[in-house]
Length: 105
Ligand SMILES: [Zn+2]
Image (cartoon, rainbow, N blue to C red; front, side):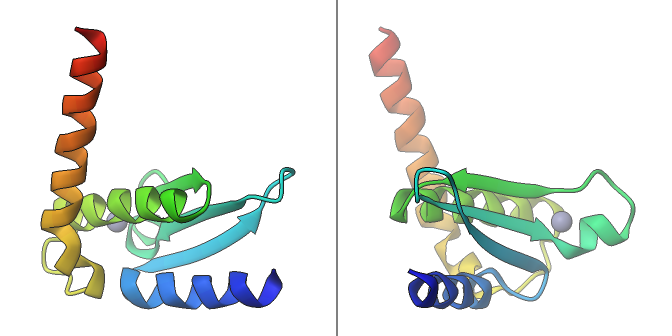
């Protein structure tokens, strides 16, 4: 558990780039909780920005998507490796919205 957690943490941190601090915690249900914090937004004294998502691979993906959107909006010059997935993250967001609309109809 611990080894796989730190391996995931390293993998996520390398994808998220130098602005991100990635922490993976384990909650009361033995689930991973992904937390990505933005170093620059804290340093500037703005409201502390972080994505916080529980779950396995889904949680990882959801936290990473939020982080990608944050970089895209606030730090457009960033060349973090995860920005390669911006189009895929936007597509997932679009699909989630369409699904919600379909469920409400
Ligand atoms: Zn930021």
